[in-house]
Image 1 (tube, rainbow, N blue to C red):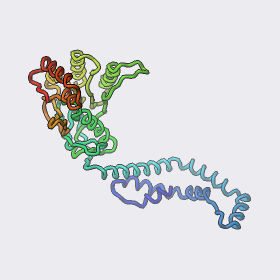
Image 2 (image 1 turned 90 degrees about the vertical axis):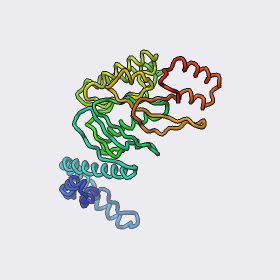
Image 3 (image 1 turned 60 degrees about the horizontal axis):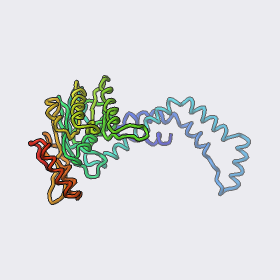
Image 4 (image 1 turned 45 degrees about the vertical axis):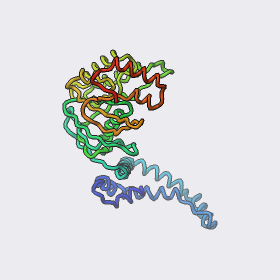
Length: 337
């Protein structure tokens, strides 16, 4: 109640509705504030005479009990008033926290909500939890997105960046980007699945159940942003590609936006014009593997899995045999990085 009285004297335009509520309701709580102050009153131990006198008067007139009863009765009758005051203070507190958080960001923007449709446009998008984030841009119009690239290149982090900013846009009215234009999206993801010894679930079964939840969500009336990472990697290549193709073709129907990361380049051709291909790339030089974490259009043209084994000083015999097998099975148009 004291906080309400103090905040009611503020006059910033961004919280004018909350300030008006406090200015209107806080004075009506003055009697309750006085009663609660009396409940907290202590004469103190420094003046024994005053303390003794207070105890006698309190025993005679039951001052603290009367103050307690009055406070309970007043609080009961003022419940709607107290609710409005607490909600106004809560909104001001949340606004202050958001403003302070915004100041800590390299840059931020107020999101623009577009009409329903398969679209999303953002520039200089980054993840708020990264100490040194690399910003990226993405423009989706009429198609979904398939991201390829090497291990550790940034695919999963970028999808998480999209997901967290879609949620921030619709909750804190703030995005970690220069611009963000998108419809209201219900974010659903299948990222980082794992097996469970206690539940008796294999990695593949955990993936199947996670993706099935997305298929069920698609049957609702809301527009979704589906984020999927390395679908069905717990099974063999042929069935993984076939199942992933069928699921992705189903999820992208209608206005739902799908962003998927994969190592299976076969999906680029299978999905055709329904998905736009992007990739992250790596650079290997002087026995060092480095990444710039920049999203680029088109499918990935490099691999780094065996190169990473070599950098980690796997036995040379292992590297030679792996490269020999790779030369026999890999596509001729996909060179190693």
